[in-house]
Image 1: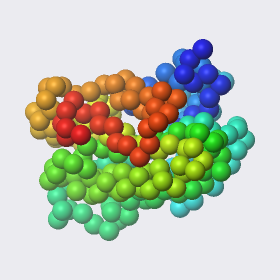
Image 2: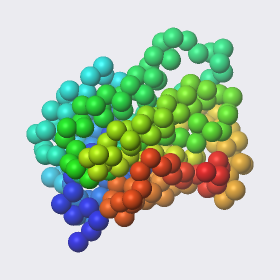
Image 3: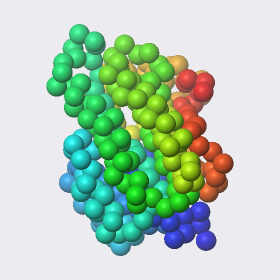
Image 4: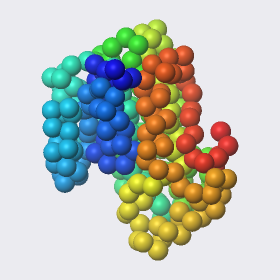
Length: 245
C-alpha cells in the first residue's frame, strides 16, 4: 500500500519535467493520474507509457474556459489531488515587452490555474490537496524575468487565498517554489543564452548545482499526500537555498 493507493490526482503540464516524474511516482505508489499537455509527441508518449493507469488529456491552460477539462475529469471520477503545474516562460528586458506577450503569458500562467481551479473545485473530494507551481524567479529580481516573475508572484497570492476559501472543505492548498531544475523549461532559449542564464542562477545557489525533476516532484508529492495533512497556505522552496525561504 502506497501513499496514493486508490487516489486520483490531476497534474496539469504533466507530460514532461517534474510533472511527468511526479506522475510516475504516484502510479508507483498505487495511484491513478490524469495528465494534461499540449505537445502531441509527449501526449502520445505518456499514453504509451502509462496505458490504463493514466488519463492523458490534450489541454491548453490559456483557453478562456476550463469547461472541457472539467468534463474530462467528470468522466473519470472525483479528484483527491490537483497539481496546477502548467506554465511557460520567455525572457526579455522591460523594453522588449509588448501587449501580446503580456496577454499570452498571463493567460497561461495566471488565468489558466485560476479558471481551472474554479471549474475543478466541484470535482475535489473533501480533504483533497492542491499544489500550485510558482518559481524562485518571483524573488530573484533577475533583469530578464520581470513578466514571468510577475505571473508566478500572482500564483502565490492566489494559492494563499484559496487555502482560506477551501479550508472549510478540508482542502489544503500549498505552493511549490522550484529554483533551477534540470528540465526542458528553458529550451526556448538558444543554447548559449540558456547556459549563460543557468550559470548566472547556479552561481548563486548555496548547494552549487541545479536540482533534478525528481527532487522537485518529491516535495510536490509530499504536499499532495496525507503526509502533509496539517500543512496549508505554505510555500515550499526547492532551490538549493537560492532564496533562503
